[in-house]
Image (cartoon, rainbow, N blue to C red; front, side):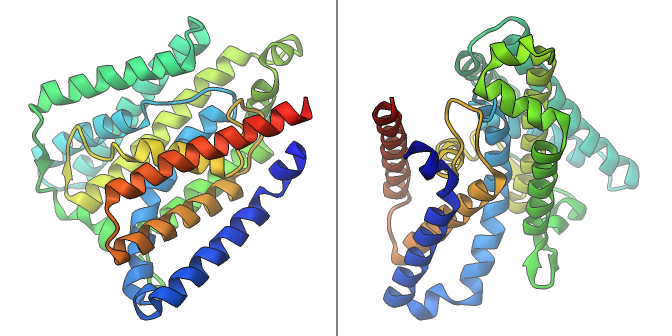
Amino acid sequence: MKISLRENVETYLMGLLVLTVVGFSITMPEVFWSANNFQSIASQMPVLGILTLGMAVTMLCGGINLSIISTANACSLVMAWVAVSYPPSLLSIVATLVAGVGAAALIGLCNGVLIAGLRVSPILATLGMMTLLKGINILITGGSAIANYPEWVLWLNRAQWFGVPLPMWLFVVVAIGLWLVLERSTLGRAIYLIGSNERATAYSGINTRRVLLWVYVISALLCAVAAFLMMSKLNSAKASYGESYLLTAILAVVLGGVNPDGGSGKIIGMVLALILLQTIESGFNIMGVSPYLTLALWGALLLCFIGAKGQLGLNKA
């Protein structure tokens, strides 16, 4: 039964998505099916989606990255400082992007060394990194935002291709790229093997520490991509942006079929979970439901889903 649930998670998510769309179509057909609503969904999903992928790659190997939001904010602050400090030019664009990638790589490397090298528990290592980064972000900025970016930063959020916001296309490219890494590369196979049984994977000759190091670097680099999208969307960077994304990202990963203990899960399931959650949130916003109530619902769903999977595991045992 446990295996059946995992194999058919995409079918269940499609069914839930259809029920959700039908429900909102009946209650508010004109507003829900408006172009503005779908434009809103397409513009909001990329940041959360890329952060979810950054969380997923760590959970697939049995870990977790609680520092994704702090990492994204740190990268956005670094990129924002470079972007506003120099006049717009090709050199300043390259410097901004390199600064963000460099900050992300350093953070990911630190997480990787703690987890793979020093064997610190992933939840403790990334919780400590989250707290450290948040403190540094607030200390450096004084809690204020860095705003008023040059036009080339804002262009990404405004641009469209075939009527679809460019950030959505970027999310699709990133999702396909990560799918190729997980499904078509030796690194991806090693990630799944480590999630299934790290000790057995090490005995098979795979350098598990190096793989884990790469996992947390990749997770941080995905956070840098999300950070740039946040900069373009909000026209500002701040230490406290996007804090509610952490819970939603974990929920999307688990709801999308990733085993919290690692070893299984597919990109398509997480994408369907993201679409479902974003559709529900958009519908609730139209209905005037409090965002705090929506956040509480996500927490309840996460607890129920993890509890259900745990019960399935007990029944199978």
